[in-house]
Length: 479
Image 1 (cartoon, rainbow, N blue to C red):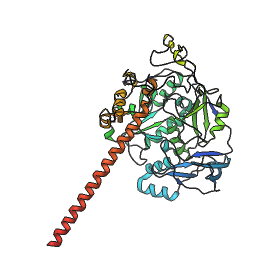
Image 2: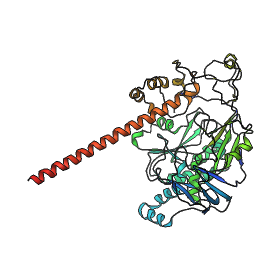
Image 3: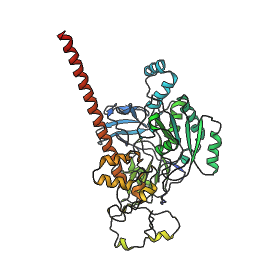
Image 4: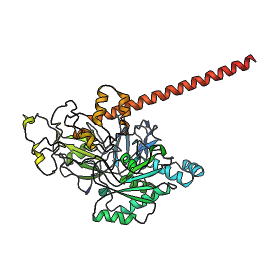
């Protein structure tokens, strides 16, 4: 399998494979919104006592995907805007909040496969699935042309697949079996790292007996693990139907939901970055107080907390609790004072894609990455570095210039829709242009315009239909 572009940045603060269990919380702050979901349909009332696994809210725009109570406690609505607060938290036995009548109806109509899909959705496992090309939640009752299962996580610093698979390899293979039972003939591509290690060989040997699993080995270069890039490299055409993408944690959640019928309310996330004391992985539940995590792991109070990886994460700001889709927290030291004469410093300890620092004379090293931009935004100089690292084969500098001149059609023709939002273009840009942000906004604008055109066409077709019906009715009356 051949790839293009890509680039690995070496940063201090890489989490190890160990998993630490956080202390039991007294209160949970469950966000009602994440990157893909908005849980606007509240299913509980003020002061209601709930058990672990009960449905707190649903996203009506995403097949009713639920927000589950990770633990038992008492509901506090309106205590914090944008959150469902769970107070007096206690760890009781979790239960599956499933409607027996609904299961009977689905079984009669769709059989055992339909019941399994219903359980995946209701027990919180389906939210780990992605449409490989759009990143959205696929239809739980739909059929894909293929499934891509990735055990690789290459963006610093997100939860690593090898950390999550520790002592859970049997659960993982059983989850693959459950996934295969949902399909008819569609292939499952299992993505593994192209490395030699005892653990990697153990996974390969464990999977070799499954003829319906096709192993795909990829180099450990970011962002070759992206579902959209993998789908293109596997020659899975977008117009042939959806391609499901699911990572290690999704397969483990599938096993939990379908083997023991328990809700999927535990997350293993990374905590890494130069501002972390002992980067590692931690086991938490959604809504776990971020302050408790920061108090234990963050080195300094002025650090910047990012929800996600260094390249694609978003600043967590004043987030009170871990969101349901969180895969990692990155902590960067905040530069509170301006670096005096920073532009004339040789930069022996600074890393850059361009050989603009003295560190270009060194071998590659892990950089002490901070929130400093190290320069102000400047005009595009057409250096071509963004094109060099782009895994989608785009010319981001050209699209940037189209967008600067409001040439949206030209940007569309340049296939901005192929952008996977990996962020490498912004990272390597010597002019500090937020190329990734520009391309994301352009995709949203083009999608909005295309939807407006589609709606206008539908209105015109409806108007023509009504006009034809009126003409026909008039002719019938005249006769």
